[in-house]
Length: 112
Image 1 (cartoon, rainbow, N blue to C red):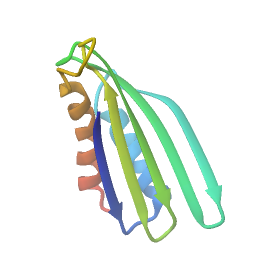
Image 2: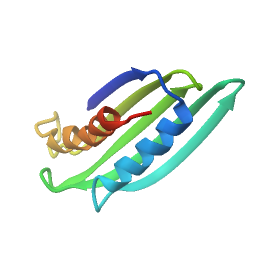
Image 3: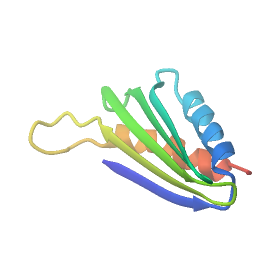
């Protein structure tokens, strides 16, 4: 498992749209498997579940991105899982790290 956490001063709605588009453009094998948006008063929560094929690992990996915030601040949590070919323990997490890099890079490029 690989994890990424970041807090930004920005509108969570604009960031969620940007992240979804950036991750989808990051690989020709990526798909958005599920999306859920919850709104409570001035807070919004986006859960985006992506999956893609990892050429380096020779398997499929998933990444769940959760964005929580309002018009002033956004908290991003990305978790990538899967990809290991071992039975008892993980020996190969290249695909997870590479998939999570698409989120890290997108957030780094985000201009708000």
